[in-house]
Length: 376
View (cartoon, rainbow, N blue to C red):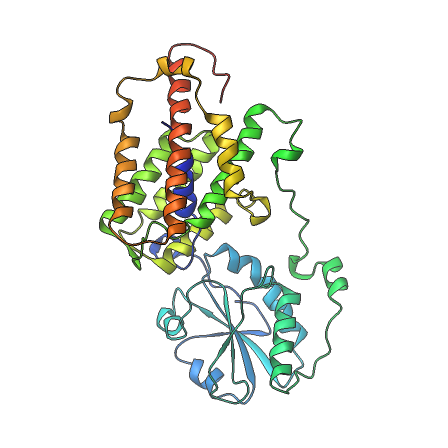
């Protein structure tokens, strides 16, 4: 049977997540230090500066190590600059790595998070900016602020900007070139290995999307056996997953995971999101995903092992660390009640993983015996 796609999923699942004030990123300097229109707040001045203020405040809760936060910072500064003459709304920021209690008080579960205070009146419950595709950019934030004011029959007193002109000028570095996502159907000139790598990225994403929090299995903390399971999967991926750059990225993730011995769900999500941005910013874009069924069908065809190759399989394969980790993962799944979708995804992953591992062992056997590896 086969191995690295399931771990890829688990790796991706272990690689797509949120906040983490762990020491690993603790040395990052705060954002907005030189900003003229974004005021930085701490627990000591937040009540007086925001909660007791007569104006509306839009506050960015962030972590300075977070790539999302760094990418968003110039957008947020441009928004603040746009409203600089307003007497109705002001902009501020809170560094959650130093003001963790303040961020916890407002239930900040991911970065960056925007909260709007004092609307419709001073002391009102803060409003959160909802998730929107590409929402945390200049036009997305301005649109949200104006909509919230309009909903409460109020106005910011500031005219809407020319969004198209803004994008053309690229103020604050906010008009990046469109990403060219690698897709198998347009990769006809690439080598066979590159095409397979593209398929694997799609497969990893499609499965990771359904198992993003699967390692927690109903728990809010990844610790003990569940932590050991995640750690084992990553170690297997580092040892066996195709392409050196993939293994290097996985090693980076494992290093970050091992920076602490337990992970809260929100921290885990931040960790994975950060890892994806740091080590492979375009590999896992939702625009590059194919359906689970299509991925499974492709992998079954692409990585099934002809009977003629089974003779290359090591006789000790069933005793391998991969099998042990697989059993540990299945055992973990069996310990809690999980939804049918998660179970189905888990078993699909295991099946695909098994097929891929079989071919991988055969390929490694050929390499070890001096034969050409025409399949990888």
